[in-house]
Length: 170
Image (cartoon, rainbow, N blue to C red):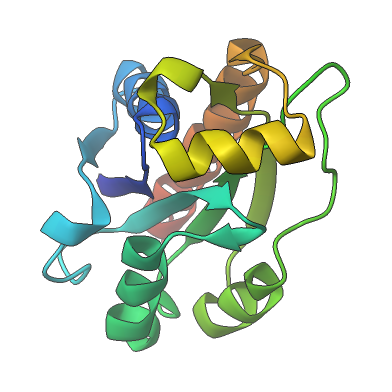
């Protein structure tokens, strides 16, 4: 069984979440291929897909949206899980799900969508991004819950392992 784990990430924090998900799947005996959406030519070779994106200005990043546009028909024929990364603070804000997620869920027939808190390191931001962050008063820090990521990825592994078991029954 082979699962694609792909996430659009501007400064690397969302990519780290994707790598953590891939690690959990690999530890469960699943072949997890972790790569950015720009490197995915097709999802045809995968038995399942975990697709995520960092959220900026309330939207998923272009590489993730473009992957859905290119592969929507294929994504709709296999198990798909979606995740967004971006809320900051304790408790994380904003709590709203990016508006295009409902459409992406519908197009891909995604099983689940999860929002994970993000990470903000001002030193990695452009001048424009720093100005925006100052205006909205976003807090610096890493607010990601690796426990939440691991728990969610473990659920994906169980679901895929159960799928293999049920397909093997006569």
